[in-house]
Length: 548
Image: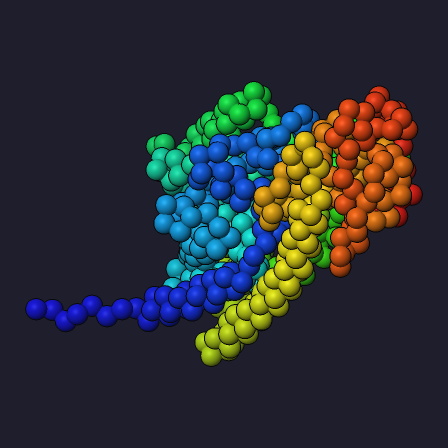
């Protein structure tokens, strides 16, 4: 009998590190009791609805820009449902909760770390570098806090990360290109900007053509990226078919909205949808300043939220590929990733700056495996000795973990405060029912409010009291939850008496359900002209303190 096969110490190290890190992050997730930002709350609510047989319609809407007419409202009218579908993976075993979402995301975070190791192997055959890339990818700062809410970030990072690994070597066969297209389809079901994956695929074709000219290789293998690009529209098809099935239109219209929004508060405008006709009113100077601001703010947020030490190390690795391409096996492996991040950065800061500073950070998760691989490569090449490289690796892992835990603690504290605020509002609503009318409220953060309390909700318009009054009457809400600063004007417009919410700056205004109630004569049943004018709506936002 032969001697038993020894386990590679590098594999054992990665396995032990994975168990420790995942256990620690799940312990953090067990303390999470709030769904987070609007995106993640929509994903969680949709997954819970699907798990219970409720379908794709939800009893809340988070924006007026998607032509809300009634509740329940389609959940996929703006965001894609892929994250919710992935959350269903563990539903038969542990249900659909914040914690089960964290479990799914921890599995996906391991996928990000494995993609980092695979990308490192594109650069060098050294297993030590791949091991370092795995450990860096496993402990990157964003992965310590992104799993606390069921957002699309980690899922998108895993899908795009593996996509970039596969297109980094354009010589793959049909099996690899099929997997590439499947990843594109899954990414397209997850985020609207996955269409930008066509850019790194096109870069991969350029690399393949360059290699073909140098080597004179024959056969179909050099042309597989070209075939994948030709079939790229088919990978986008499932998302559009889903839109057609549930919205009656293959295009959700989200791109048209994002192109003309210049402020996130415009998502809660009532009676007016931003369009190209409103851009001249903004002024060309402001439009240019908005793009310059988006570039600066996005760059700063990347450094704040995406692990400064690992990012600097990755930058050193990128410089290494530029000045010494001969020291790595496949220096062109970085080019598809560079094409993707540049295309996404340009799209979000120059074309869609109104949402760019918020949305690009989610897209940037797709670059995490590449960052980890570049950081490991820099350590391997620039450290004067293996011991120094190990020390550098430990420094990166330590800083990433400490930085990530700091972000996680802040996020948990902020979310706990937001949850308590929602619960307090719900308790006030419970004590002041409106006879003959089911509870349905206008409130800021309607997605968060519904997921936390179960109360159907619509967004509080952000373009002034006339818009709030108009929305309240049009949609027959039972209560308006608004900042106290708006209380006197709302009571004059809608009648009734408001009740302050203890410990907050909010008040609750119940509406009279009687015929004519809530419209004492000073709120026109015609949509105010100001609500149909972009500049007027913006003036309301700028001059009303609560909207600044």
